[in-house]
Length: 137
Image 1 (cartoon, rainbow, N blue to C red):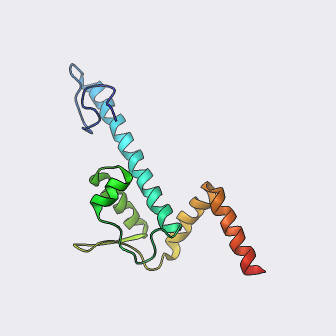
Image 2: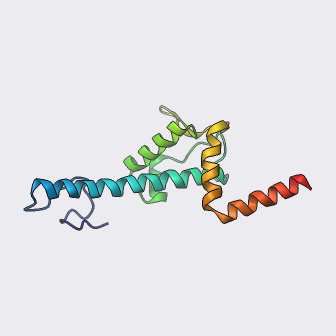
Image 3: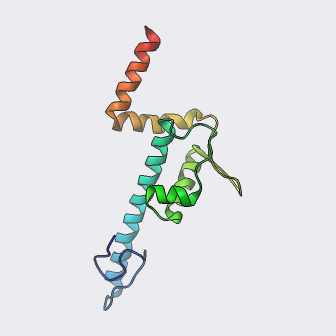
């Protein structure tokens, strides 16, 4: 990603373009911060989808941070923040020195991401209806 205001080439979250006054520097910081927030949100959504679709099963250990960051094409700090959000939602458990795991039982936290998945994916809606039809037949 290239920085539109200076030559940092997107490397720095907070940079000071040459000759910039304090006000334009602050606006630049906010813009870069918003991009980082969007990135973390995207990572959270992708990991939630992987859990809901069964790519990551209950009790399964997540791949190492480095491998997961490379898979998503993001930095490790961005990935860590996304993992912290999923831990706060109750979808992941973080064990110091042992990695990150999908919780054994999703319980009530499962309903929020499931609703989001059903609202955003026609395929998921169709799969759910097909599943219900199979159970009720």
